[in-house]
Length: 216
Image (cartoon, rainbow, N blue to C red; front, side, top):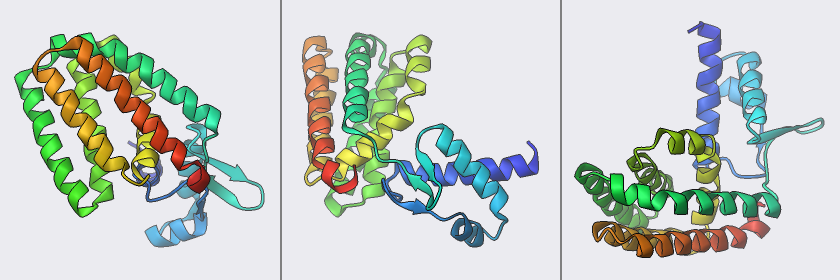
């Protein structure tokens, strides 16, 4: 990879991670100069990285203020949750059929780790565990078509998840949902897992809506 191109991509990944892990919040201004000074590089690769993020609708450029983390509209939030609801309910039978013992153990360990992070309020790792839980489920479908379809949406889903988890009680409620979903998976109960998946998304959307006056 070209060195200059590699630097731009590295900066892009760094800023994107901070957005998705809610270190940068909707409405925050991103200073090209500050980022460049912090990394001891020129502004050019920083601007290129920010333009990549603008192309993904994670930031936008204001003529006066520069680059700013986007605020999703209520309509956008509702539509993302609606799409996620359709996709994840479709996946339930595939997950029940395809999940392996190794993946079940991975889910169990994920829940144990998430519980520990919720108890100490480690928000970064709460988001990581929450996202990992769903990614294990996505991969367990063993469907290339499904994973290709959802891969372009995973970042947006994580972004909305981080916002919802930041609401009061959001992390604990989501963890409890995951525990119940895991039990339904153990029993290979398709009907119950569909009901719990739908309820989990309803909980997330409600918590997300609670944050609209704060960040959205």
